[in-house]
Length: 428
Ligand SMILES: *[C@@H]1O[C@H](CO)[C@@H](O)[C@H](O)[C@H]1NC(C)=O
Ligand SMILES: *[C@@H]1O[C@H](CO)[C@@H](O)[C@H](O)[C@H]1NC(C)=O
Ligand SMILES: *[C@@H]1O[C@H](CO)[C@@H](O)[C@H](O)[C@H]1NC(C)=O
Image (cartoon, rainbow, N blue to C red; front, side, top):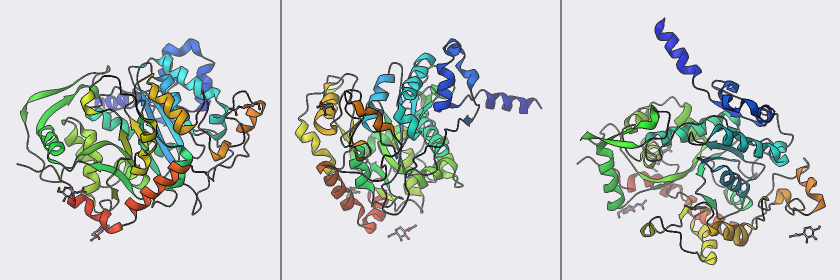
């Protein structure tokens, strides 16, 4: 019986609780209890949101529904809100996560900011995770955090089509109207993942695969390092190991396979990668290419654009030519990385590409007539339930991006050869 009580205490200390808008109300009324946030936990439960009055259509020909998680750390509340507004559309689902380094107060403030936007309330599609975990982005804790975000989004909404995990270092180069428009005709089972396919990328990872590391964030309560231990191990033989970029856009079907599927590879691989550095660069790639039902669904593109010149180190990003940045979506990049807090590039993207002003949303068909103009008396109209959230109006960049997407997804044959044509991590 001792055993079972241990297990019980493990489960109840797993204070996963989600601040839906309802729960943030509780918070707002209870600032004096903030030091005791965990006691509002719904251990392992998610607070269900009130059903929004305006549900997105899932008819044939409707734009897809995207699920985004946005994660940040201590002091990132404002940046999360900024990114949220830059990628907001009433069709989509959003989950905001602050990691353990952020204080409970900051988490509550983020929830309060979400609560204070009537649009979020109206469409009921923005959630704040009430409790987060320690993460090291080079360790397995980064994979578990991403799976956790995906699992919460699966639970929150049964309709979304694709999942993308973003952090405060990402910023869009397209409006959501553009993105939703471009993805409307894309088969919903496709996964956008970039594989490494050159000797440098693969060899580096080969070393990683053989080096045994420990991610202390799995068992300590403060953010900690990933450290190497003495000794090496062999490259796996039971499955083929692949690697690539840590950014991706994954289909709902594939996320279900990884989070709640019957196949054992997602679990086995998670355990194997527990002692590997940079597992986020391999976990999903490896499952995709080792699963017959998914290996033909891979588009070899992570939809992201690295602004920072790898040679530039941590120096400030050189000023970008907005004209060339505007052209990035026509080559597949819809998110720019890695943008630091206060980088002037963010303002320039807002101005030149997204047409976003101040603290407002990016203009879109759903709020075309009103609302984006703070000084306008008709701002309230934005929040009325009459908005059309099923049609989108793309700009020229969205049209270009759609062209790109049709090009890379049109040939099913070539999608089915990607896993065989990219380099895998081979045992020596
Ligand atoms: C994937 O593509 C290959 C090669 O075109 C084909 O032989 C195989 O049956 C496909 N698998 C699935 C599950 O469609
Ligand atoms: C905002 O609305 C006001 C009043 O309707 C108008 O005078 C102003 O030009 C608008 N500003 C923008 C940027 O549309
Ligand atoms: C990977 O590289 C090989 C050799 O350079 C090339 O033949 C193959 O087409 C590449 N695969 C992809 C998907 O780019």
